[in-house]
Image (cartoon, rainbow, N blue to C red; front, side, top):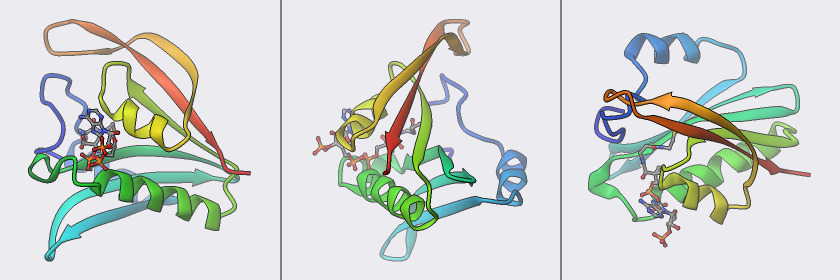
Length: 134
Ligand SMILES: CC(C)(COP(=O)(O)OP(=O)(O)OC[C@H]1O[C@@H](n2cnc3c(N)ncnc32)[C@H](O)[C@@H]1OP(=O)(O)O)[C@@H](O)C(=O)NCCC(=O)NCCS
């Protein structure tokens, strides 16, 4: 979490946020490992036949080696096996992760203007994306 998220945006979750969400029903965490060391994770939550990809992150030391795509495909596969029909996510508009989502069939569903604010007070739109799994 600490390595992957750019501290300028304050998007990394705290330890207590993580512990809290993991105790909630329908939440699952997938870890990516290279030679036993954790190098990435994806955190998702399903409610009935809808799910949300809450977080996905890869250690920058392993960036652009396909780990993020593997985690995303794993989340999609898990959603299918749980009977999820639509997977949602929300991302800062200027986050390069948008390319990852678009490459896996996610389509833009909406915009939340000025939803994110960085530590300099600069604001960024949030884009919501959805992937239909039917
Ligand atoms: C987004 C993130 C998870 C991608 O992980 P990754 O392991 O580097 O991604 P992959 O190597 O699997 O990339 C798959 C494809 O996604 C796209 N992509 C990923 N990172 C990209 C970047 N920085 N710029 C442009 N395209 C990118 C590319 O199409 C890439 O394919 P290519 O390398 O063949 O061109 C990672 O950059 C990260 O942890 N970012 C910080 C945390 C974050 O903002 N998460 C998203 C919001 S929760």
